[in-house]
Length: 404
Image 1 (tube, rainbow, N blue to C red):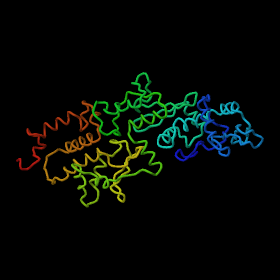
Image 2: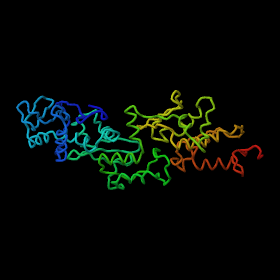
Image 3: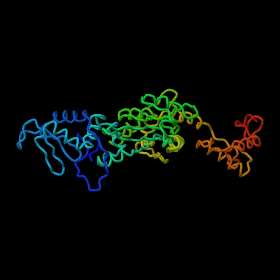
Image 4: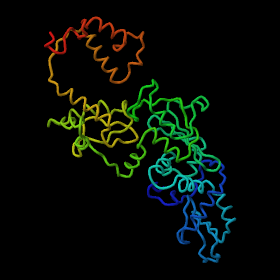
């Protein structure tokens, strides 16, 4: 089938039904879809038919014994029908309602080529499957993941698409048990805080709270909802598919910084890009951000850490990364010192486990009674009681030697 960004009216190529074609749900041809077909035919020359999957429709040119103004259908199987009146055309199209409503859904409801159209077509694999296969799947419900969202596409008996959008953790929960919404702009409040009520500065962080659902969105409202939850992700995903993603790499982005953030630009010591690797490893892993990092150190130099597996790309270091890098730039300007502590082997491992648990956000998962875990709260308190002095110095060693 044709690519959604280059195809014209008949986005699906003509194809003949196979003997083992899936059972297509019964679809009624709505009047607005038929009116749209008539308008589209009237806007075209007789030699430029309107294409659907499996057949074309056009206004007769007056040849082949047809009266000018009458209609004709040219199925892929060659069983041409000519000289059709408007009523006969409606009857013929009603027999092919799935193909007609599919054309109408994308051509008139979804509208212009671009990220919205590409996204809704991607959801049902409209560029890889036939109408019959997709309609059969839509009747059962097609599920797609987008970050932490679970999108379920279904179809009405008029060929209209409807989308259920919710948190992936709420898959299988009945709509009645969730907070329902209709307006895509409601998503602005839903994404502001995580499940603990903490502000989410990074909208693509895997910390989206659940408990809500948009149960019956139209294609246009689906796009607006998803772009509200994850701003610009569909647009950038589409640009990447089109080979038009404009990536701004680390050095290019840092060179644009000014004021208090200009200090980050100095964090390039001519010794490679190890410091930027640390930033990317800390901030741009799948556990911290659902985007897939596409920016590197510069256009010619890749970073040495993985960019993640997210479905939507990250085209430049975000404000969270820049802000963190500014803080780390100042911290890294300090001279290293040697500190001497006495720890048992188990205590050394415990310090490592604490750092790992905090870095991975697993502290809430460690039960209070599970003292086998190094990051267990009681074990950490025991280590503090044993190894901290009255001034809070680890191992009794002050941070600044001059304090001794």
